Amino acid sequence: MTSIRAAAIQFNVKQGDVDANLAYVREALPRAAGQGANLVVLPEMWSSGFSYKNLNELALRTQGIVDELLELSARYKLVIVGSMPEPNGDKVFNTISVLDNGTLAGVYRKIHLFSLLGEDRAFSGGDSWLLAETSIGKVGVIICYDLRFPELSRRLAIEGAQVICVPAQWPKPRQEHWRTLLRARAIENQLFVISCNACGIIGKLDFFGMSMIINPKGEILAEAGESEVEIIAPLDMQVMNDWRSQIPCFNDRKPELY
Image (cartoon, rainbow, N blue to C red; front, side, top):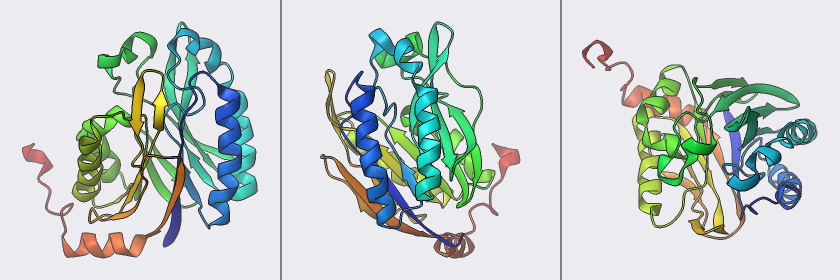
């Protein structure tokens, strides 16, 4: 597609309350679709939050939620991206299922686990990246802490990503890192970045929101504040193609030297 409309559904994820989080998303999806969105990004671990005490139990609900979102993605003609816990023995994966108009376009399990908050003790790390072939184009996905590892986003760009989606729970006080890294990933890879952060108090952490939609020049097309909101912006693929022609970074790479 030459042009799509992307949305980020930023909300306060209720830790451990799957029913409340799912109810919020059920209401938000038709609002975004009604404004013309055909790509929707949700926060990281949006169904359950990082409720470590009962994470394995909460993960058992994920497949049922995926099945429901498959139906909703078909009803509203959406590509939906957001991460949830996936069972994996005595641990879980932090997993994105890319849902495309009623079909599963791919699965990505978070590679980089944030050891500072103990993610590595509760989660298993993924071992492969995902570039999903969807009805709106080639969509790459990363999750939160993955943003600090530019090699992953660059691999997606080299493989042909037009858009990178970033579900996150990125807390205060590191909002300037968030803004800078998101723009850097867009600029250095000359593609669109759609980020969706959580907002409000979740457990003991305060989340600042600031979900953003960024174009290949690093220009911010839409940005949220700190409250619950949907942001939407058009993504014109010709803008990306023209910019890559004007500054041909990919042609000028010297991968044999680094």
